[in-house]
Length: 602
Ligand code: ADP
Ligand code: MG
Image (cartoon, rainbow, N blue to C red):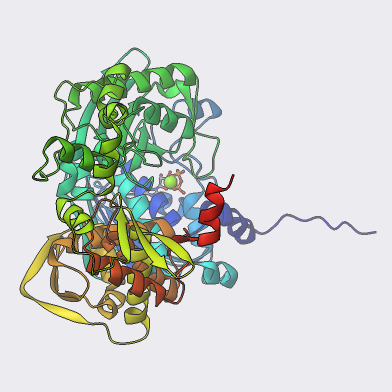
């Protein structure tokens, strides 16, 4: 038998290695941005075409490369950042594996232009699939520009595997944000298909966060600051009332490198103990500095996971620091999540028999999240006092406004009421065989959902023109997102006037939307799209209809007139699927006369 083992040619080995480093356009973006930072750049520009599928170009004003280095940098395991194994334990650079450029050049068309300060002429190298096609001297600015075109052109399977432009752009923006947040003093620009998406000027940390996420972020931030021998913690957490349903804005940076750590996340979430509603996630931007020797970055190829020597101490310190800052800055109203909003109405009314007063927000100026007893005292005043009420209050609480009270008990018997609202939450409707109990908010969600879905997909939507167009500010990332779903939004009844980097001007809205709700429904929609990462336009439609329905549906606690109750019942039962809400919850229950009888026969 002859020998059969042979070494793979370099370009094949590189292509295989590329699979590990480059999963998608966003991976290229990350590697190129990190190289520019390692080169000491003060301004970094990222240019994209078609979500990076056609072009990813990074231009920096860093130290550039010599002619020889320009050629060398595309070799596998070629790096200027470490020389020996020990260096791995004392890393001050982003890169060190010497694999990124070799991998990228194996699976795309690369054009490198670079020049050092001391050189008169720069170098331009063109490579396709690891093969150098040309190398020449050129006139170029100090620094480096690397253009990566047609990613995965020679691996069709990978190219076809790429997601829609919306999704790939999302991944790129995630990477871009992480790098930009880690280096607030560096100026970053991002252009996508010749539109400027970000222009982040060199600034302090707080400004950088606000520039990335929009002006609304500023008021949400609580500063964090702690310095000990083994660790410095800096940054911000968002106040508890701004917690989000998705985990979006959670950032840890360790020695200026974005990392993922469920362990440290746990420490932060733990510090919010008692301040967050179930299922809500706090936003945070936390910058940890630890001695380079005490961490190991080498455990994951994309370098987003690291190992700490003294994890437990870090955990405790992080938790205590965040908790302390929250305690100091927590001037927020007490959020009353456990209590059912409908319970307070009757109580108020009993005391003040003639008039209903406007709902008040409970604010406790002495609120301290660490004092547990205090908190529960504020939380359940209604439940506690309710016990002391006598049986009469049961009636006043069932019928929660005077008007209805009169109607119900008036001598005038000729009008038979068929629907009743219970606790401003359910509508009870009489039917031949018994009663049906309908959850008002879920029912309205279903009605709105079917209405929107139909107007978006089937017929022309009914749009109302606004007398005065409304200008709404968003972060540039949100604007980008609205722009990609613009045509679907137009189907739904929106019409747009002007898109700028920070705002959208809206001149028409769907009939069922009121002007005051525009911002909230768009914000909720962006949030929902973000959560689902939809890929086809059908699911866009569906998410949109669901999101609008959820935001616009009447809520528990809303009083309904008899007419409204009637309309709700009728509209619900003319829906295609009246049984379940768009999110799969049951909308109503029926109780037959038989079942009611049985309640009394046991
Ligand atoms: P690594 O970053 O792990 O060293 P890369 O393949 O990303 O590996 O880059 C190889 C080398 O090319 C780097 O070590 C650096 O010397 C050089 N290099 C890459 N990008 C730049 C840049 N933008 N400016 C200057 N030098 C660069
Ligand atoms: Mg690198």
